[in-house]
Length: 165
Image 1 (cartoon, rainbow, N blue to C red):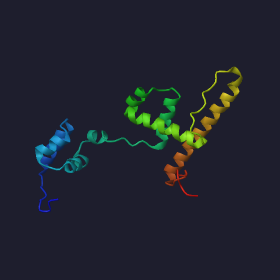
Image 2 (cartoon, one colour):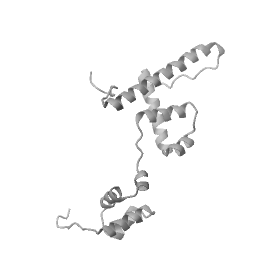
Image 3 (tube, helix red, strand yellow):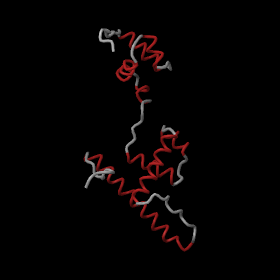
Image 4 (spheres, helix red, strand yellow):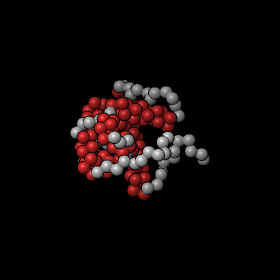
């Protein structure tokens, strides 16, 4: 590590050009070479001086309630993965990870590593299927209430996995 290296000071004009170049499509690495700066510097400049569009293209933050609603919509067949990806701007890989994690969590809550049983199309089991559907809706409503309470009251209600008793 070179401690004798001096910090470069850039004029507002150079900062503006560098940020504009990156926003117009130039890679950050190319901008660093062109203007002689570190990658962290260009990132800081974009955060500080970038346009609203450039800042909105940064990583999306989705709250747990919305994530659960997206996952349940996919699992119930209301939307396909590609439709969900396009409408919410979430990568397919991320959606698949969410679904996989959701399945693992639901299996862990049931105390089993086996996949859930398929729904039978037997006319005798219609009442059971209706009761199961109603129970799932009730669980979803309760989870939503917990999410809202956690968000508004700023406290963690759910027990974290692996927490000591």
